[in-house]
Image 1 (cartoon, helix red, strand yellow):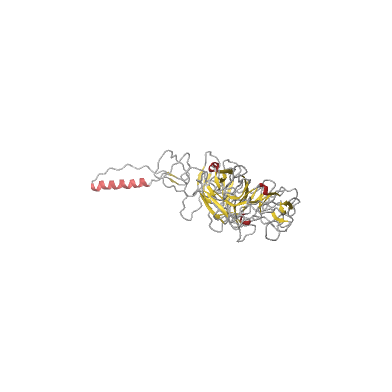
Image 2 (cartoon, rainbow, N blue to C red):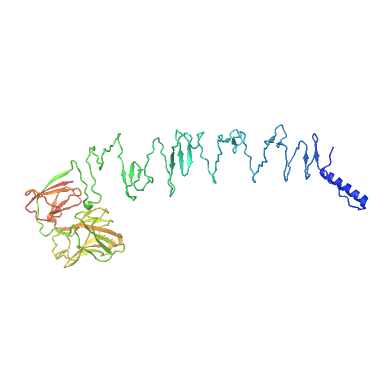
Length: 530
């Protein structure tokens, strides 16, 4: 039986009131139409409600929906909602609600997708793109306090761990820190190892080799290639940057061994020299060519030779110093393109050298000159001029010229190539050609070729001599730099002094002494390292 709805009961009351008003007051009012009864489904009964709109629907026990039901507003359910699915069979999906202890709201987002299930209460299960017997389960360890895991605002893969208890202060754990990875180690304590990276200025890759071993550590916070004081590895070598970060490093590289080798450093300070070699030992000469009197000296059994030079010569006035070890006032720049200095830093003999700095705009004929160095002397018998130079740049043969002026005009001679910068080097200029009967000016000038080839640079001139080849004494060997250890007059026993009695003339091959003072009555012996 259908019971009246709230709308029908209200309509009946209105009709009664209107009838009474007509009987007692003579007022006739139109009677409104009876409202549609609310559908009521009683227990054990069923009614078809398809394609109808209801302001309210009361279901006494069970509502079965075939098709789609559109609900607006709120729907109240007593306990569970059961979904049959596309197939009417013995299997349904029940949406069950735990009895709430306060008002609860579950909100579905404004998007399409599949709801993630939580079958275990402490984990979330992901089926993946393929419906099969393999799933991924995101499990949570029972927390002992409120915990928050934050996923970053980016697309990436999560880094996983095979350690089931991976966490801060867990044994063997590896966790992340600000710009670093933190290794707890096997013991749980207050001490961890953190691997962090210095802020990169470009993409960097640190490659661990396919081998077992222990990393070599550095106490230098900025240890890296071209960092001051850094020690880095290279192919078959260790690279030492040194105190200055520049383009020059020292590399220790072993020769490929044919058996196990051990090099032991002694418990002492000093410079290392290998003594167990079965071959000749070579010590490299001072890298500056002897700047400020620097020498490479050897304590031990050196390769030296006592050379009998025979009777010396008397050069008379034919071995002439062009520059001595105190060059004050001896030369002057030709013009403002060259700046001169009396250099107390770069020198080999004495305490100073003559410095000449060509600027970037220097042109041919720019250089320095001594206007009366020759003093009108005849140099016709002279064959060579020797110059000891140090330059901040190399040059090709002919970039610089030696210009000698006599009463017949200027004679120009090419200065040989300088193949190494920042090293004191002996250069010989051949002046055997040309009339030099009354030399006055002596100059070193840039050539047109040098104007093209050279930029700004500085040359230091320490000593210079002009001599006759007849006053050369061949030593018979190629001596080491600064390899003349002593020159002795065997008759008197007197030891001759360099730059006073002789100069050493280095050539490619056999080297020479050149006499300055009269040694024509002396038998000369030379002790030299070669």
